Length: 89
Image (cartoon, rainbow, N blue to C red; front, side, top):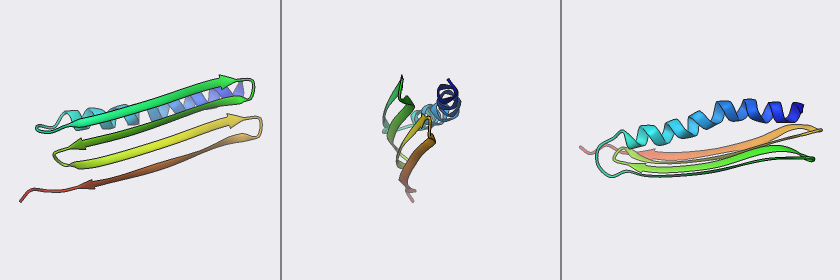
């Protein structure tokens, strides 16, 4: 149960970040494309969550992905993010 509570707490903090990034990109004028995907699992071995997000807008491109796993041995995870911005002059 403690593992589930940990994953839910981390998910509550990270999901708005992923959704907010896509929301900011869609608020711009011009070309906009975004994609996001996520998974959540809870079973007798532990609990985990993973997600990926990419977007392209007039201001640049970005990509982020992460995973978090919690079991009897503790909590582990990783995050990767990259992006580029440009200005038309």
